[in-house]
Image: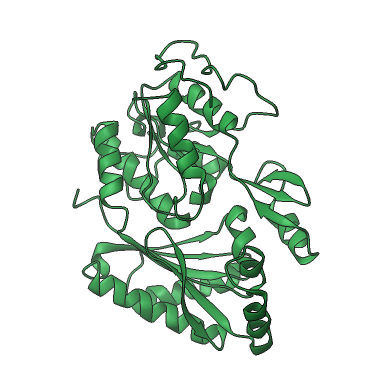
Length: 343
């Protein structure tokens, strides 16, 4: 990578650093538009104050693996870079040139689908645009244990945006990554600096747990996470693998013989985490996430509410860039420790 051109200064026109000025393709940047207020921001932040949440001189940037898409980014007052994936050789972005129904149809037809990192030029130009209006920005990409995009972003920030872009590896993905964004927004709204916010995000990075049932092993096989032989046996036996994310890795957790058994396994596992790691249901936010399984996810959310006697259950569809790895029909459960009252 070319040598840094120095620290970018806030101005009415913020030039792209040397080495990032050559740019091919349309730049994509979402967010920080309409007013709105994320859930759980706490007292004192009324609806309609979405722009004030970013704190004037500090902005929050994340990627769509958080589940935050264009409309929600606008409402929250954050900036989001769409995560790319490649379908039969064509680069695609959810909500830009491919929507979920067409994506799952392509999956069913056997299309060759792989994920990719955001272009450093896309990312660099996004940061430049954000820094035209803000002094600093924490960037919350997906976990470094699941993608190299975090380290790529960190190298870009250190070389071209020192002191202004802070890349946070808080080892989150999907709904837990989204919650980290909401935590960051609250802390900035409370008056914390970018450095203090980054420190809190890194300190609390392991305060989360995810369990995920996949409907088929084929996509894990394609991603190289299991062997073809194991995938074939799993398909013949019609087993339901349950995976876990405890920090930065996607690991095997259990195998169930049916959809109902897999749900019971995930509920029991999360209940143990809630009690033993986080001190009870009053200390956590709960989630259900899925790929192309809306009705089952809604029903499972009701089971989660009943099991934990809590209405704090957020349901979300996994981004297509994650669906590339887990395939259609995945269903998961997760939690994060509440940070608003304790930090």
